[in-house]
Each structure stands twice: as C-alpha cells, then as structure tokens.
Length: 290
View 1: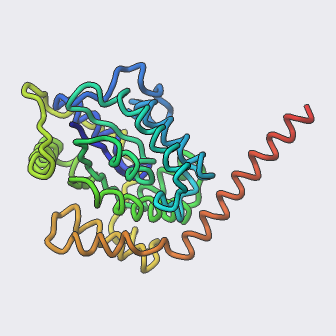
View 2: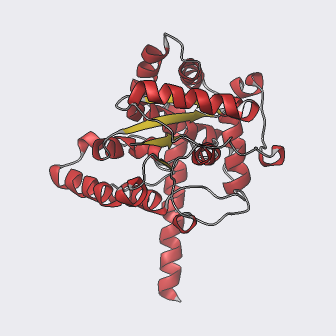
View 3: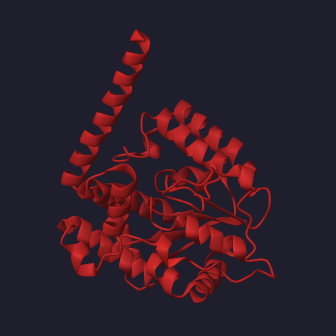
C-alpha cells in the first residue's frame, strides 16, 4: 500500500515526497535517485525505476515528457498494451517492496492509468502549483517561453485529472504546503486514510522545513489569469475546487478532464516537439559525419 505523488513539473512534488518520507513512508535508498542539480539542489526524489519506465513507455508510443497532447492508453493494440503493462509490472517492485511507499515522477500525470492498473492498493496525491510559477520555473531551467510552460501545464493537468479518477486520491496546494506544512501533511494523511486506507507508520517526524530561498517565481492570481486563455482559466478553477475539496469538485474535474487541450496550447506544444525531434535528428546526422 502506498501513494503516488502526481503533479506537473516544477510543482513541488519532490517537496511533498520528502514530507511523506518524514512521516515514515519509504521512497527508496539514496542510490535510487538522480543526484541533485543546480535547479533541484536537494534532488528530484524520483525513483530511477519509476522515472526510467515512464520514459520508456512514452518513447514506445513515440512520445516524450514534452510531447503529451493526445496520449490515449486505451487506443493501444493488444500487443502494445501487453508490452507497456509488462514494463510497469516489472518495475513496480523496485519502489513498492517496503510499505507504506511513496513515489513520484511528473510523467505520472501522463502514465498514471498504467500504474493504477498494475499496482494494487495505491492511492494518489495531486500537487497543484500556480501555472505561471510553473512556467517561470521551466523558463529558468529549460529556456521555455512562458506560453509553452503554461501549455504544458494544461496538458499535464488535464491528463492527471483523467488518471486520478481511477484511484483514491486527495489534492494539496503548494502554497498551503509552504505556509502550513504540518497541518497540510496531517490533513492529507487523514484524507488518504479515509479514501484508500493508507496509514502512515507510527513514530514519524515533523516535515522538514522548506527554505524560503528554494521557492522562487512567486506570482499572484491576477498576474496568472492574464497569461491564461479561457479554457485554461476554467481548468484552473476546477483544480482550485479539487484542492478545496469543494462539493462541486468532482463534476468540475470530470468536465476539465474530458475537455481537449486548448487548440493554441496543442499547436504550440506540437511545434516545440517537432523542433526537439529535428534537433535530435540533426545531432545524429552530424555524429554520423564525424
């Protein structure tokens, strides 16, 4: 029994995993994670087995983390489905062998239906962060235009809402984690226990403090709204209802999950994905010449 932490890139999922670890959940040994980077000085907390499998199944269907629009796992052939589920089943014991476990990878927004099918007893937590802050962080890390980061946020969150519908889950706002980490983690544990029976071990410790200098790109609601198209604003409203555990959240999230990625966002992501593929192909051709 354990918890998948689901959220868009740069949304605070690693922070929440560390909080769950403090509460007694097992995420893996230090050798199971990528080393820290300039943009994540405390590490991503993504188990390599989970991350590698997500990368592999996306590549298997000709996709990648930055090319998410239109992924439909139900459209796989029987052979394809057997292959991707086989890869997931093979990888799961690497991080689920010690209960309760916690695991994260932003690509779970895209692949969660596969893991939900193959990992019994799993629940999920969705982490929401202001999409403009997400886009600012992606721009700082990867050089993405703000509109592209927001487009990716939209695609990931719509896909995440579809995947979350098949698992017991709760949601949390990144700002709330920063402001009241003890209370928010306790609330999450209580809601996960009620929804899916997940129970934290006794003897857990308080969540680790979040250093203010690690949290950048803060933006207000008004600033954010100015950068979103109407469909993205509707999506953000649905997420706010989910985080608030509002009675209308289920209906709003179902509608948001069923809504295709907005045309402008899908077009922008398609252009960027093609540019990346072309750059990789050019690099390979140059290597062949050398």
